[in-house]
Image (cartoon, rainbow, N blue to C red):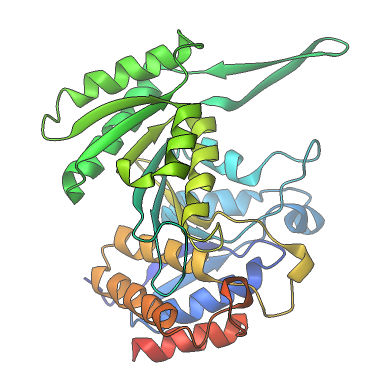
Length: 337
C-alpha cells in the first residue's frame, strides 16, 4: 500500500539507450500516484570520465542507504577493460538471487504462446567469481567456486518463492555428470532443501539437455534453479521464447538490498534516436513496485503495458510497430487512465 512518504530509490540510467528507456519508465512510475525520490548516478565509462571511478563511492553509499535501485543497461567491454558493473554490484551487496520471470506478452506472435517460466539463478558464485590467472604463457586457468552456503540459500529462495506463489515444480539444472564435486554439491544442497517442501515436485536435468528441451517444449518446466553461468545462458535462451531480451524483466535480490535492471544491452547504435523499447526496464520496475509492497501500482502498470501490446497500435520497431520510446510510454500512460 502506498504511503505519503516517498520511496527513495537509487537510479542508474546507464549508457547507450539507457537514459531514454529510463526516462520513459520514470514517467510511467510517477504517474501511478506512488511517490518517489530518485537519486541519480552514472556508472561505467561515463562515471569514469566524471569521477575517475567506474562505480562512484556515492553510488555505493546511495544503494547501501536506500536498499533499492533501478538500473538501465551499462556497456561492459568484451575481452578487456573494466569489470562488469552488474557483477561488481551483485558482489558488493551480496545480491545472491537473480530472478527472471519469463512470460509472453499479449499480441506478440511467438513459436510458443503461453510460456510461463521462473528462472532462479545463483548470482555470486560459480565461474563469475572472477578468479582467473595465466599459469604459463598460452595457458589460462579459471576457477569455479561452489559453496554449501551459496547453493543452499539460492535453493531456499527458489522453493520459498514457489510455495508463496503456487508454483508446482522445480528443476535443478546441472552438469554433475562431469563436474561431480562442484555441481554435485549444488545438487546435494538443492535436494536437502527440497525435502522441506513436499508439495513441490523436484527434478534434475543436465544443462545441455535442458537447453534442447526448452526449445522443443518449454511447457514441461515451471521453475528452473541454476548456478550462475548456466542461469546466465538459460535465462537469455528463455527470453528468446517470448520475443527477446528487450521484453523481459530482471531482479538482483539479497537479504538487504535489491537492484532491478533491464537485462539487455545498451544498443549504442540506436542511442539518442527515441526508438528503443522500454518494456524490459518497465517490467523490471513492476517487480520493484511489488518489492516495495506497492501492489496496486504494480498491477496497474502491468495491466496497462499488456493492454498496449494487445492493441498493437503503438508498439516499437523491434516488435513490429512504428512508435518511438516516448510515444510508447504515452500509450502506456493513456492505458493507465
